[in-house]
Image 1 (tube, rainbow, N blue to C red):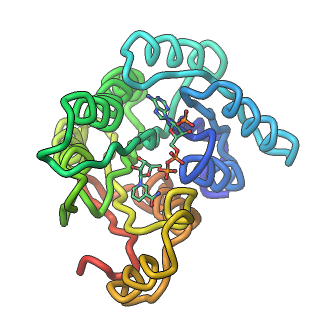
Image 2 (cartoon, helix red, strand yellow; image 1 turned 90 degrees about the horizontal axis):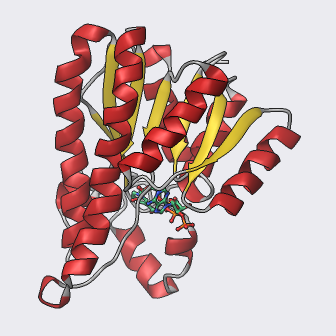
Length: 246
Ligand code: NDP
């Protein structure tokens, strides 16, 4: 029970990696807030967790809107009076080669991935500063470290998250608040399921551990950073990529 009695908010947690992080945290005793732009799906995930005997609630939130984030945070504080852990997980891709990339594709990815992380961190840091404790875990990507053709918007947003994380780690360190990032590589999700066998083979060749990662692999790194085991770790990025980028 590494997160007993902790209140953890995970953005974009109705499905995918965020849902797995929420499930892992709930199993470790946290009350998890399933926050997502997709309200129905967030409710379904929260119901699923509560039916398994865990503690959760769902809240609609579009991380790109400061107003939406403020409303969500007020509801959490009304209900639970505290927020101990935030995982900034909500993220999207809109891939294109730079010459074909529209301004909308650039803006959409930067706004959800980077501004969304800024919005949630800014609002919730006030709560944590008062409490003199808290943990931010920001989901970056290996693409933010090594880059990828066709993903300049995504790579910029994720590299931005890594720089943002280091900066807030320095701002908040003296106040008992840590901020770290997790940078997943290729993870088995709906997105990677669509890849052809040939494409997967090519990917496997570049992964020393020889397989795709799982959402559980990412959730395990998040759990470590959100728990007291990582109290003396801040401003770091844990890469979860099977050794691909080393
Ligand atoms: P998914 O697309 O499966 O899940 C993302 C969730 O975020 C969805 O429920 C989505 O809602 C929600 N969302 C989208 N926009 C917003 C918004 N504006 N406000 C709130 N919620 C929003 O993604 P993954 O689980 O694959 O990825 C999760 C994180 O991990 C992302 O940050 C991603 O960049 C990162 N990552 C993923 C990798 C992978 O291999 N999958 C690899 C490296 C990093 P909706 O259902 O409506 O779209």
